[in-house]
Length: 343
Image (cartoon, rainbow, N blue to C red; front, side, top):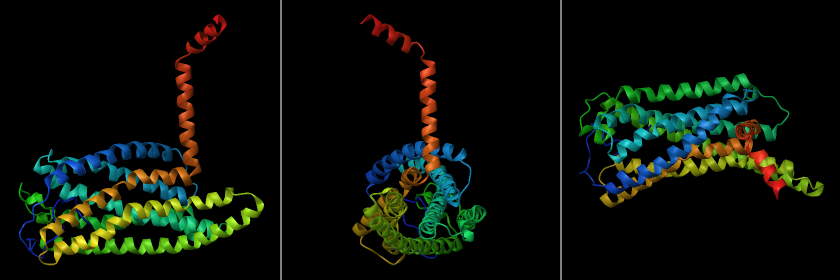
């Protein structure tokens, strides 16, 4: 898994750069991206705190809700990692904080990002089965099975990312922490590169599977549309159409980052490259990484469009707040009536 490093991921097997250092525009690193991440953090924290509260009060009665609950937890943890990145990228934090980011929080960030990617794949698969075989009961449509699958996802990425923390065991210095790869041992660099390839494989596999799922779903939606055209009843077709929000969020947030990740990684690991091109790839990688981070703000759209219990819980909370506000201001109603009588 990658890091929040402002430099290259890896250079070569010895951890030393294979080409002279390429200076970057510090305004982008220290001002633009921290500002963008601050916006995502504030919005993501608000939305995911509300989602966390809502799902805490919703029982796990279906596989869909089980996957959504795990997605909320993953997004919430990912959101909490952002302040550390903001402080280090803006240069406001001490170099010791950057060492902590390189060794721990950045690894957790990427771990939860890929957990969210797999969970979105499971959500898409669950919606696929719900539409294609609405009355069928496969073992994967069992709540217990969903909990086991979600647990295995967390365990897999924990085991995969833990060595990235342990193998970042070289002495941290103000100069070394400028590039997270400098803190890794030789084996740590090789493990890090292997994990990057594994994560790439996971993303592209899920993307291809989701495309196949939604091709079939689109066919079903079209068939439903032709039927409801005659019956003047489009509610079922609208419900099925909403399921495309999962693929939309997945593709918009994560596809650009993984498209950009391949040439960026190659630029850092395969010999010398023009400095201007390196800077362009760096900006592209950081921009798409920020776009991937916006997933913590986009996932609540899935809850709103597809999870009826979530919407009901939010509306219930809002109505209770309005009732509470009304009871705490009992003097307004008599005053209004008095004014109306006087007029």
